[in-house]
Length: 94
View 1: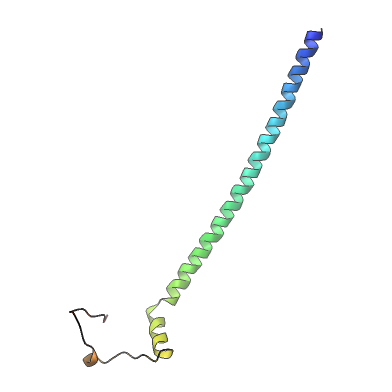
View 2: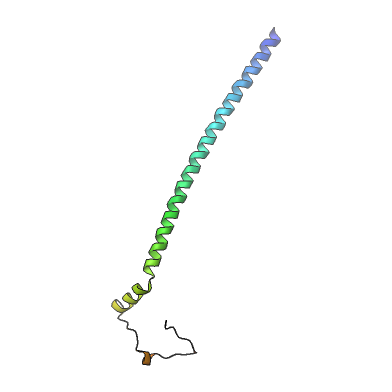
């Protein structure tokens, strides 16, 4: 009888330890899922920011904007064709 009681206590302890292990594993899985979702949200936000920065860069680098700023802010003008001197056989004219 004492042996059966001892076995029962060992089995109950094993079941309890197993239940605690399951709860701990579920908790860790939930924490990992939350962290994963947070990282995915951050990735999406960074991708959006990257796309916006690429659009902004392409806007700032358009030929028309560069020409307008050269004319308005720097007072530059496009030279007449007879004033263009080609050195080394290359021309930057488009």
